[in-house]
Amino acid sequence: MMLSASKKTDGLDGISTFGRLTAYFFGRFAKGSQKLLCRLSVMAILSAYSVVSLAIDIDVLGLFKNSAMLKIDGKDVLLRVGETSDLGVFLVSADSKQAVVLIGDQEHRLNLSSRIGAEFKTPVSQTVSVLLNKTGQYKTRGSINGRSVSFLVDTGANIIALNTPMADSLGLDYSSSRLLQATTASGLVESREVILSTVQVGGIKVNNVKAAVLTGDFPKDILLGMSFLRNVEISENRGVLQLTGKY
Image 1 (cartoon, rainbow, N blue to C red):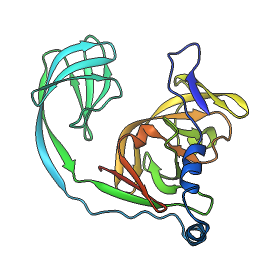
Image 2 (tube, rainbow, N blue to C red; image 1 turned 120 degrees about the vertical axis):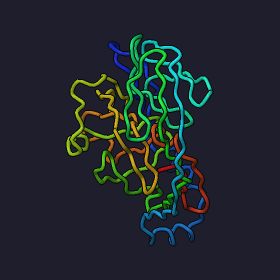
Image 3 (cartoon, rainbow, N blue to C red; image 1 turned 60 degrees about the vertical axis):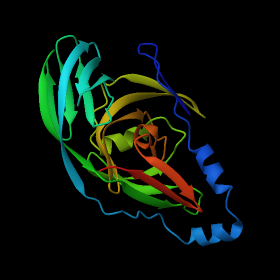
Image 4 (tube, rainbow, N blue to C red; image 1 turned 135 degrees about the vertical axis):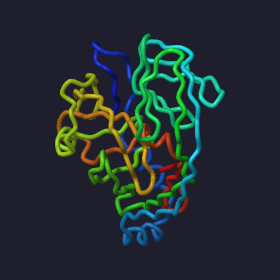
């Protein structure tokens, strides 16, 4: 499945189905290993973590439409809307007059030459382990905006994807969101781009994650795509997929 913006909007990278991921991992295991894994359900193993508080300084050097030049702890950083710096400064919006940034759970509105100091909490890594299920897929429980959901891990999808009934059950407002088009086996399907406030899998939580709401009942499972997975390290060993990230 490929996802692109409609003619009214800018282009967006494609979404693929989970086929390549499933075929790759499923084909690697002998029949004996598969029989053993069939008896196992998906599970998550969470590692313990601690939190270290650090103070960071932010100076506004330049403001532009949908981007801002910031000096974060002495380092010049150009952020575009929707991007997060290495120290966790997320740019919510920007124009020539003002930038809105999110640091942890605190929102700050900055004008040109503004300077702020903020507490930033840096946790040690969290690891979630997911077992290959009897159909050769990696499924795990998680949450979207605090609501419990089931995810299908899909490294071939560039963005989290869910269907309209799922989006409605989660209370997502997508009616006026950016219009996209998704190419599926059945043809073109209309979809809408949304920003999910939080997406969490085990102890790993990512804020302000892009997702696409596809009209209809496809995909059957919520695809945990790269808009979340690019924030974690992924490894696989003998039917166990490990996601390592931060809370």
